[in-house]
Length: 180
Image (tube, rainbow, N blue to C red; front, side, top):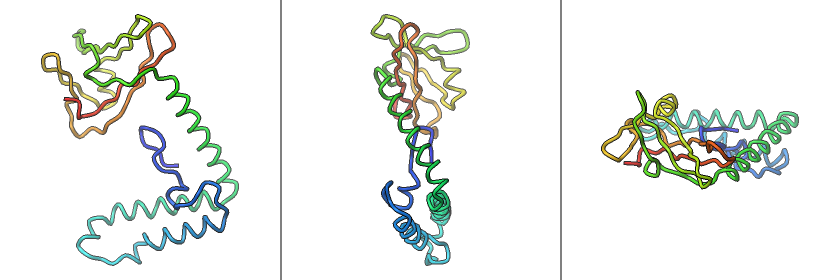
C-alpha cells in the first residue's frame, strides 16, 4: 500500500490493475502487463520520454513491489489485513469530524510569537491551533489585515484534525495555498 500524508493513495491492487479478490493467475497477468508496459528496456527512447524516465522508473518499482507482496500468499494476507485496518481507521476518523474548515473560517488573534487560530464548536468551546504548530508541519502563515494565508506556495495541500477543548467533536482544518 502506498501512502501519502492524506491517507491511502494507491493500493498494490490498483498498481497491477486487478480486483482485490483476484486469484494468483489474474495477479500474475496484471503484473506481466504492467511490467512490460513500464520496463525500461521496452520503452522507446525519445526526447519526450527521457523527461519522464524518473516517473516511469518509480512506477516500475511500484509494480515490482506490488508483485512481491501480492504473489506471496502470506505477505498478501498481511497486506490485506493492513489495508482493511487503514480503511476502518480512515472511515472512523471521517465519522468523528464535525466539519471541514479553511483558514478563512478561523478567527485569528496575536499571541506572543504566534498567531492563534480559533473556531467555535457547537458546544460553545473552541477548536484551536497556533501558527507555531502549523510551522512544524511545514505551513508558514501570513496575515494581512483579517486575511490569513499560507506563505510558502510550494507546500502541498493537507489537513489537520482539531479536537474541541471540551467535547468529543473534531474539525478538519484543510490547508491549501489556494486560501488567499
